[in-house]
Length: 92
Image (cartoon, rainbow, N blue to C red; front, side, top):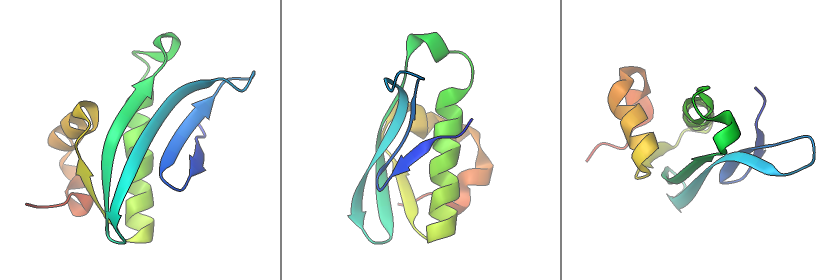
């Protein structure tokens, strides 16, 4: 699944250009972004799309060298479940 990317957003549109999945971030500095929202259309639920959106942000953080503070409940649960994301998690 290939997501489109904007500076602080990864998303998926259907063939008609309608948004069907997205994850958004709020930058707080050059080295920290907050994941504040994850959404997947009902037609895609249960297919792991939201988890792949979080993974896209994690990969972007690794590539660009920023940390993530997951405030969105779904993203927070992904970080709690996946220890392999610890390298980009903002530690308190």
